Length: 241
Image (cartoon, rainbow, N blue to C red; front, side, top):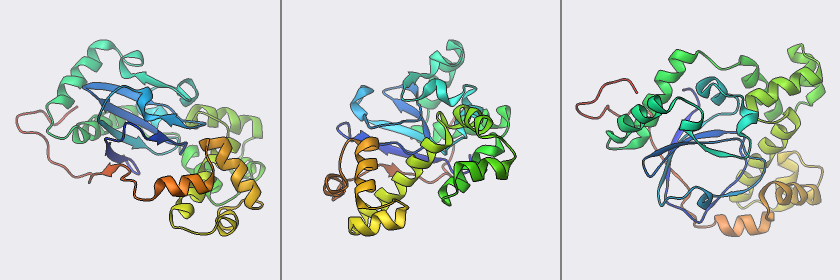
């Protein structure tokens, strides 16, 4: 899927921060879904020593999963709770046949996306406009919806309204600047906060920590290991997930 990223992590002690995305997870031979977050989540809330995932860009997961995003907000659920158990067992066996389960997750997503069709195109436009710093009222007018209609569509696509998504996207912009070692005042200005105090309040509200503590914790951290999207099928297996 365009914009999707496969990843691997062994950091059981890490904390997952809001990013507007949803993830399809492979943990200990189980398929799970991580819904859109509104606050920090310890990786350890899902038991397991190694995590493999397919990160789906904002607004793209509901079409793939067949579930409105708001039903999964701040939740980690077994895929068998969303899809028929027999289908999930078949997919679990197929993904387990891959040497690298990231490849299996990609294959599953490709097949599912082909069957389900494309995500709501409104989601990509709203995300792009929020990243560009447009107001919710301005976005609603640009896409031809009232603000209440836009909020309802956003709840289905992102798991929360456009204002919350805008806060989350701005947070990620700020954290990327913090990781570059920029002074907090400059981070606040470049990321679109009113001032440094506003940055500190938002980081605390959405991550449970401070920009300074986040910067210290990110130094030397390994993060997640990405992978290329072009990985061969496992030998002896079907090309469909």
